[in-house]
Length: 148
Image 1 (cartoon, one colour):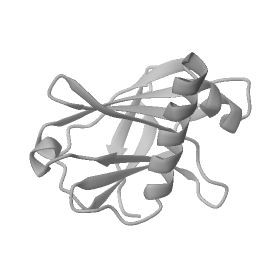
Image 2 (cartoon, rainbow, N blue to C red):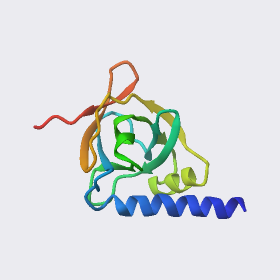
Image 3 (cartoon, rainbow, N blue to C red):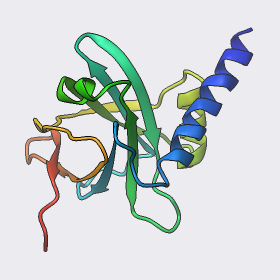
Image 4 (cartoon, rainbow, N blue to C red):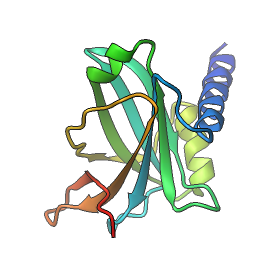
């Protein structure tokens, strides 16, 4: 039974990743994160909360053609985006990123490092570009990506 639940969880994450390839819908957002820190992460892991309720989890590695991580979220209703709180952690593993991600989906996360999230106001149908940076004191944070 545990293997079946793990498989279903993996399929849900993969379906969510495939849906993120398209533009976000009216109640959806997409975070795109570029790693500008010194840390080499196998994956980034996001938990999405509406109030105290865990509304979703996402974890990703960059695609071969891209150098950013994806974190899609679909809200049940627009108000959920107004109350959205996100936590982030970067997983470090000796496994290949794809294998580390599969192990995470099976319930065996890698060594994870907390990442501080900025306070953002979210609107449905938008893509939010963020960069992962070191704070100079051993900590990590996400910041809105500045246009170059």
